Length: 106
Length: 146
Image 1: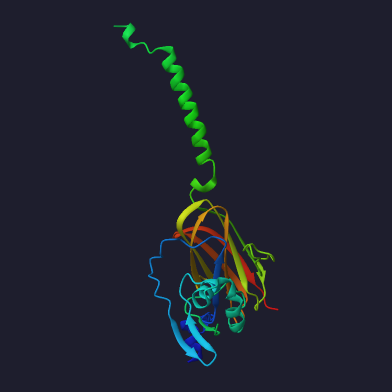
Image 2: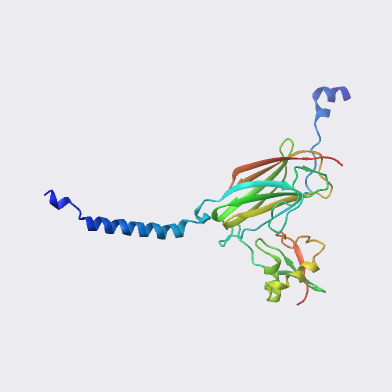
């Protein structure tokens, strides 16, 4: 059987690495287009509440300051959201659609 | 008949002066880079980027636990353009692909990064950068085991 496998080349197949856990992101000095992207941006809505505030699901085009403006009426309060989500935001310039952020109470 | 075809000298001078005035005004409006089409001018790889999205720790040889950054410099104008970074491993296996849509009328930089909590397999990798689905730059890099 082993000889057969060797002859048929089955053992020679190189195992392909698994890249399913790769994490990626991007950011830019350029602004985002004024016109919406081809994918419609869903309405930004709170996705739930916790004992210590709400949770919010990031959508395309969001930034911490935009979210701060939405919840606190003041974009400069974005560090509050950053602090509450230190476990998942290492770079405050980088948040990704689908991320669930904790929004501390104002 | 022949005399009626002549244009008076004063009219010619007036036309010349008007033409010169128009050209000066035009130069003021068109002398910026904002009228050039957006293009990718540079792609660099490294382990970190600064606030300006430029690479601060440039390398093309990484270690398995590194986060790999690519900084894409663009120049020119576009109301909406899509940059795409496709990262592949050795035989073309796609590692990751991400896009960023930008609006630009100046020199800008866009960074793409990838990380792998379980560590990158050692080997040769390739980054291909697309601008509006057109391949514009390719960079090869390597991950070496510790």
